[in-house]
Image (cartoon, rainbow, N blue to C red; front, side, top):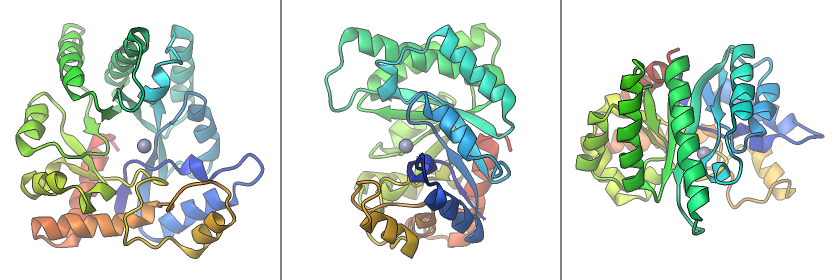
Length: 286
Ligand SMILES: [Zn+2]
């Protein structure tokens, strides 16, 4: 059984027709991808995802929170945080909080950076308080992240709260020494996806990184591995131009990703699948 720790399955839903979304869910479950976590893109998507996953709660779980890119303009007010808390109380399949820092592409204004950092702090504390896993999206913000993280762990300690079980989502080119540095700061999991095929420094790090620290993710519908051929209904969907994206990825490409991790580490694929599944169960306290 494979555990997919990060897939934006709501991408496949439409206001008028969710059939592709349901087909993806069904085909994942049929193909041994027995657990999936769906993180939010926008604040509103927290609620859209909760509705979509009705009936799939045993297999498909939800992360709530705010993508750092959205956190620059959508301020995480007390009211918004309360809405997330209400959703958490209402649903049984919420297993994580998603937040992070992302300074990529556009140059952010000082106020926008402040909002992002504030939302990162608040959501991390919320994860600790609710005993939820923490999914961190860190992009072009590594040094700032390390500074903020130190401050947050200190604050949690002052509040008598444990550091949440944390994953750095969409790992890339950080070397083993830098990776071990954050492991020492209480971050125990690293999400490995399609970049494993192309990112040389990620491949080198994975070689020596303990399998105990690895969870699998696709970031579907993004980051399609070159060798992955999606099921026919997805190619049909793509051909019909429902959603514009070059090369749609689905959680089923995890078999290729697990195979590549196994290749790099020189171990059987079954071991990669089993251990990463157990790691994800631990990360999300399932
Ligand atoms: Zn993502």
